[in-house]
Image (cartoon, rainbow, N blue to C red; front, side, top):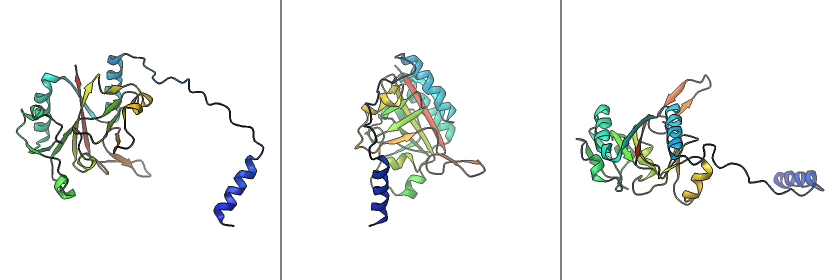
Length: 209
């Protein structure tokens, strides 16, 4: 008998005669903030900032000017944007637009100054942005290798209160990336290091209306 078989045999013996498990209650709340879109957006803003993301709010008409300012402040000469990002979003910037290409190598992506993407959904209660590789988000690697990521979230359409509300909107067969703040890790002495396995700087633009 293998070690695996021995372990399973002990488990079966331990639970022999145990009563059948009862029905699991599913009557828990799916949101703790109700159905107020404004409250969800404010909570998302607060939690994103708590995770050290840089959060900006604007209307759709002010988006091109805001993106141009953020890229200029970064000194970005190149900006990578997937095909689903409208040209109008980047019309006011002087940076050179780079397409999301399958043939791009890691060193080429590392040389990009900034990345601008959309998102699939944003979760207010956890301050989480979810990407699913859609046309306005591109391949996962373009948001993991470059050091500066600007993510545009359209409110209220893409903002939900909680994870249970987000999951039905997502296709588990797609390449899902869940982002809560800029990439960071800590060693045993709790010294925080950012940019280890993703962008060092995450900026989130909440576009209202």
